[in-house]
Image (tube, rainbow, N blue to C red; front, side, top):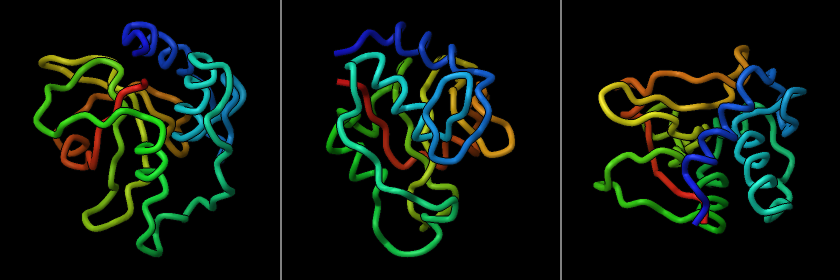
Length: 144
């Protein structure tokens, strides 16, 4: 299993990277999947698979769960009742019943949990993992 402290440090190193849809280049541009892909490449040398092209509104229509399916292929699922841990990969549903379409990495646990994610119009940032964000978590994973 990858070292959680190293994963958190890698994620924080991406902070300030501009938001660029479908990109995965630290300092130049990334979306939420690109952040995870970039960290994977540092840890394992190459991506496990090339992501298909996707539009910014790809999760608004249909019932497919491409991020969930991809995470299940390459990451280790975490039980829902397991405590939050640093470096957990979070998969979010941005609204109830919608396709899970946002990713982040837990950077702090405890009384004031935080996560690193790439967010439209903000780039890669570290945000408080507030109750509204926590209520959107569809699944959690860990890097193998």
